[in-house]
Image 1: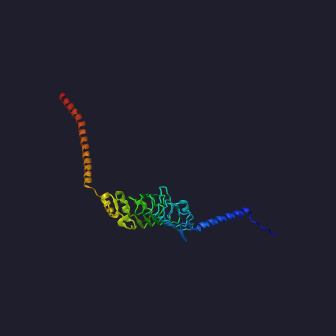
Image 2: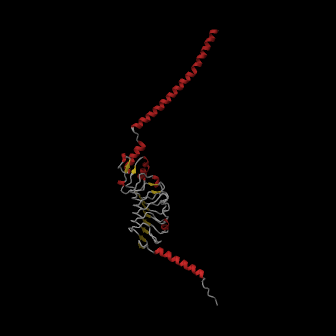
Image 3: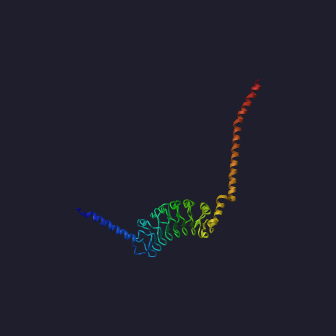
Amino acid sequence: MGHLVLPSFHSSTSLWIAFLIGIKWTQRGLSCPQECTCEKWQVNCSGKMLDQVPTGIPLITKELILANNNLSSLPLLQMSYLNELVYLDCSHNLVEMGLDFTFPGIVKLTYLDLSFNRLSYITSHTFSQLNKLLLLNLSSNPMMLDIKEKAFESNSLLRYLDMSDCGLTYISAELFRHLHNLHILGIKGNPWNCDCNFLEFCNWMKKADTLYPNSEEITCSKPELLKGLTVLEAESKLHYLCLVHLETEDFIFTALIAFCIFFGGTLVAWLAGISTVIYYHPVMKVDDESEDEEYRMI
């Protein structure tokens, strides 16, 4: 007759600990933060005057709305656990991102709204881990003055990008080199400086298969000559001013340089000839006198 083997105390304790941890993670995955309302896979925490992202956001959340609060930062570690998140709305907050900020690697995130915040810079690190991003809204960040050339190098799937109503004065065409899927680009309401450096981006705008909402509001603030013109209107003038056209003063200056070169060359040749004559003439004269003297002696 076989003997009944009872589980040891240590093994049963380990099982209980694992069971309790599993319950805790399950609760975290299904619970709803007290400050928010939850419906299926959506967690809505908008308009709650929050200054911190609530803890205990379910791990299965696919849509998280944090709009209209007082958030100044985003908890990178906490948000990195939300692997199922595809939609994140952080608009109308006080969010700031420094030069070293890197958005957490939420691998499935396709929609990100950071409009109406206090963003200053966008670098190649900021969104480098968001490879699935399709829509990015950075509009109405008046403190945003610079977007680095490789800022969207890792976001090649982007179809909608909005940078309207910011503080941008210049943008490089290199910024869009990897965005082959870009369909809509919002850049209205920025104080663009339409100088010769801006011409490359203007050329890109004309050639790219991209839509520009409210294109009549994409205007130049500088220089004074082009102020108020749309960027596309300014492109032809910039092409004329920067690549083709020469003012009367430019023609005079060019002619003066050509004359100086010609005159200088002629003068050098004349001086060389004079020097040669002066050098050889005395020798010839001495030889002639020697021949005359020998002739008289004969």
